[in-house]
Length: 300
Image (cartoon, rainbow, N blue to C red; front, side, top):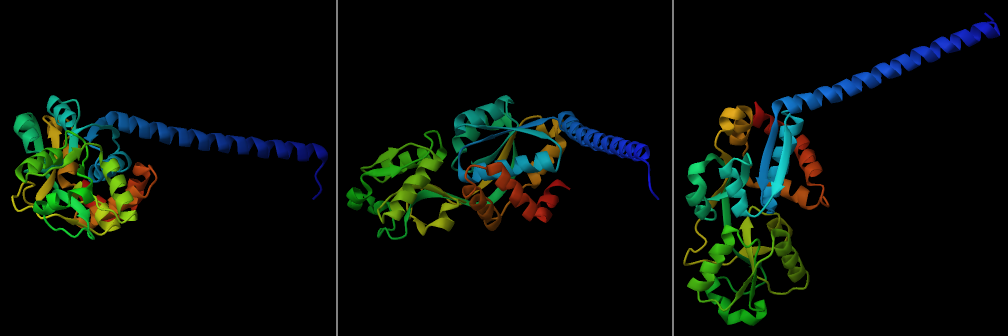
């Protein structure tokens, strides 16, 4: 059938009109979905998570943020600080939770000071350990031997944040073992950078170290023996929260109670984030998708 030019023009106009209406409808639907999601998060509220710039804390906090936002519909604000202000902010109710409290030794003083003003939601990782860490090729095995090889270590122990519990324990170790060493404060990333540089150049270095940490998967390392038990025994990592969180956000509190990782799970999460070039939250989301059954068990 042959159509006149007039009919063709009318047909094209109708088709274009229907296309524009369909496109507008799709745009409105997408806009509404985005709006609804934003309204849901706003209605559920904002969860404030504090963390210290330590590998396991960064990893767990970003994973918790990804789950709370993507799977549970909350908004999340994260704040990085040293341990002292973190515990203070939780006790004051300015922050909701902290997922990196090492107990019973490393953060003992903070729990003694603030424990009555916060809630311990239980451990999220078992078998944590702190101490002095050296490359495996270092041919001493005990802290007691360090003075005899002071020059090889340049008379320094590379530390992390000045307010960290492991720094206080190391000051005690220096005193108790009579070490003629300087403890150099810095940060978790600065410590691993110094470790990386030493290993690549086959040099001696002693750092304040802890496990879980991705450095043990990347390099061949060991803890120096601590016969005086200055660094304590094996610890667990706990989640502490402000008082009232269980009443204000019971779903969030229950999720944080359920949130637990073993050595392999946390190690893989830290490794992915360490290799993410700064995109920690995207790396955590990738890990979350790859471990859907585990994540589901935390939020059901």
